[in-house]
Length: 329
Image 1: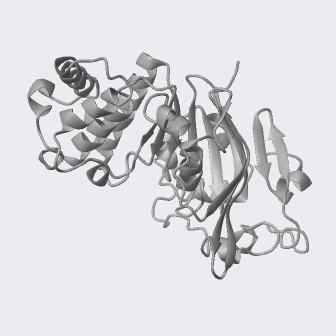
Image 2 (image 1 turned 90 degrees about the vertical axis):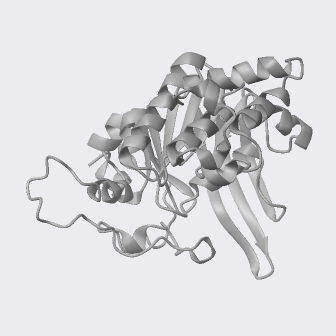
């Protein structure tokens, strides 16, 4: 099976007057047709940066190396006209802040229609309106035929997010990149938004790249998971392996910080990973996580950058301790 998206050794370096900063380092992964890939990690780990590099939306002071192949076509180095033709038609992105992503001076229906018209100018105005209503109904907007003429400020936060999803999937893309689509939404609305994404995937056979900091969201949506830390992928596994055969200490820390219904002692506070994620401009030598790690190997983790180690079938971790212990723990 040929992948929808194949990323190899993706690196992003920003040029500043004070010097170059390597923000993303040797990120590699693939997404197969109809697959859901979750990308998790703390804020600043490089999740959204990887998304922007894939879409070709980085600023002029960014240097991108490696390879990003979408349906076999190399995107790095592609012309802006080529990328514009793919964005929104075969490669769509759902931003995390619908209020700023939607234009406040145009109706929601007009913005959805424009997303279709820019890639298919053959449709009449009436056809575009009907398609906008159909999409709003698909994502669960009540009375879609009436709400299509509303402005974004007339929608609630959850409705705006669903309208943004409708705009993103208007042309039934092959890959949907959802950049924290449930941020700042309450739990009930989160569930509704995730259900919408799942229904759209089932209907269009789109692949999904879900970027989030919430492992609970990943558990219910993704097939595979990438865990990112300080601009690198530190663990990759299926959802079940990630939760039950965790290998990397950072992933274990993230899981331990989640509240659990089956916790034996609920009076204890939630676990907190000590310290803070380093700035890309001031990473420590060796493994970037070693100053916060509770199983650090002195003289190794703080000196050598770990390689990707196979912890099980389809399961890799970038950790010296995994190599020493011989697999998942």
